[in-house]
Length: 234
Image (tube, rainbow, N blue to C red; front, side):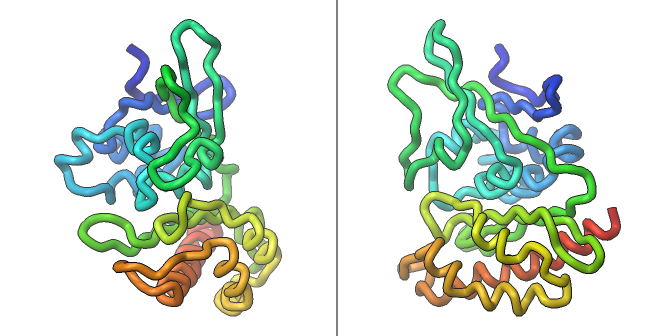
């Protein structure tokens, strides 16, 4: 009891029971309304059989670096609630919980009971995009920003699959703050070296280092274009 379902807590955070299936999350009205990027990401996972059986808690505990939900969870400043017996629960940000590929901060005897997401302030446009191979993301980005006076502010940028673990790009967020919407493509290209340093992707069967960086840059550019348009229409 209590490990499934979606509720809004008194402080406005969206609480998701860890055993809630992906399929339920992609269709849940509260998720659609308050944390829509998670709904989009959930709808991309595997196939309908996987989404009917797999759960959000199982996904983050498995810590597959090619995870759809993780970048949106980073944008929503999500935390993981862990419980061990009768002890008081402890709570960790997702970026501290997922330590590496298939490695988390969960301790022996602990159970992930919930994931708590903080909805974005009103007026921020949002977008989730990915490139995929065999139904798994090879690169995915989640972005949010406010478009005001033809400039972008309050950016949140998260990237997954090309790096382990998924990362919130706070340095790039700061570098793009105040940039004119029409200049975003150039500004992202100007931060190519920063992306390479922060993400540090490795060449493998899914692509070369250069290809992965180009893919992330392209997805960020497209996602920010969609987010700024959505934000200006909100």
